[in-house]
Length: 80
Image 1 (cartoon, rainbow, N blue to C red):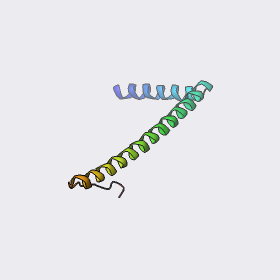
Image 2 (image 1 turned 90 degrees about the vertical axis):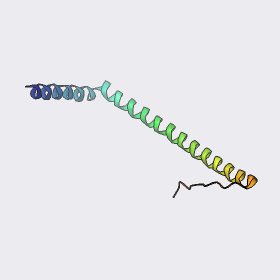
Image 3 (image 1 turned 180 degrees about the vertical axis):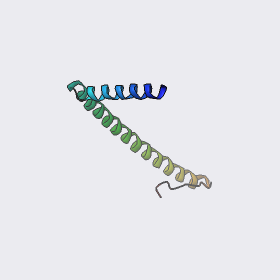
Image 4 (image 1 turned 90 degrees about the horizontal axis):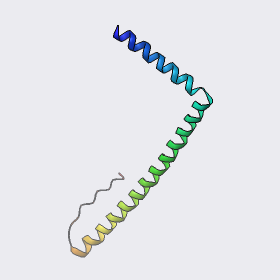
């Protein structure tokens, strides 16, 4: 009984969502979500690029400091 009720309720909600997404409002919502997701993706790509550049800069500074102090620093190349 619980399974059948859950199945019918789930199917009803699914049908309502599909119906809403086929309306002009639903299509506008989908387009807005796509645009927002693309913007977030671009922002995250920019942040990742900035982080990679800063990391390379810090690794370079670490190389310089190791030469100045004579310390041995293990540097892992994460690009391989």
